[in-house]
Length: 315
Image 1: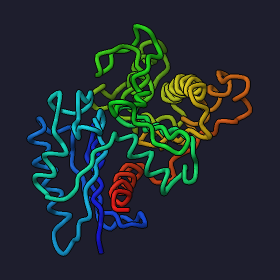
Image 2: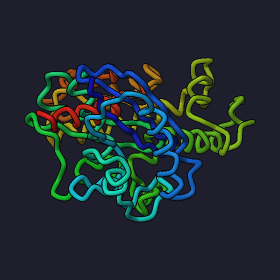
Image 3: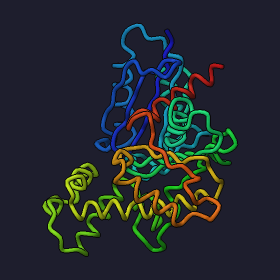
Image 4: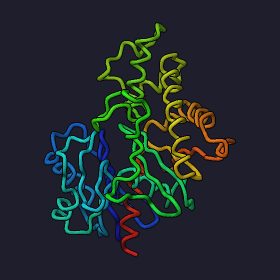
């Protein structure tokens, strides 16, 4: 049986999975991206993980990877804000030279969009947007049944739309980008802003910035912590306002939220939907633009989407 190898390269970790034509994951592996010291170290660990997965009698149909700042036409990763890479990394050339099978590279959020489109919450839709809320914020857009790539393969960078002029510094070099407010990292920054402006007690005050994670904030919010709950409300307010603007761009049937931060459920979705409704154009009010959670799990949308790209190229 032939299998596709899907790879999801993220700022925190890189995940790999062998996937059959039905979208069933037969094996998976992962390693830390954040601990790598350049692309050479990254490829060393990537190939080690690949060798582990491909040990035995595996018939590999091809490899596809989703990565931030991917240039899909050139097969390169360029100026990725959250990856420990040089400004331009020859991903496809390097992996193809090592493995000898067809290799494709797609923007990480486009990979997730393909996963949701073929196997998940957006199955059968012709117009939808997917936001991946992880270390950063990725965006994939399907319009009129076509995945939007853009002239140079970088279309849909909603994470770097300015939502606050002269706001927070972003890894891309700009200020006030959406992902600096709406992402796991953005949520943490919001908590520290709130702690500086409110006096309420919170166990979060005893955690350093380096040690704090979005999960700490999520668990504190579930326990009723004022600061954590307020951080989710503020994050949802910013996200909902941005979604209202995005809805005005191309009027999607739905906006799908995936990634670690989206796993917070109602803590994020309720203030987001409320904000979207308040800021939406009149003809988009009344919940006409659906906000949906990914149905593929926190780690699987991009893996399945990358694998779908392999199978699509075989038809």
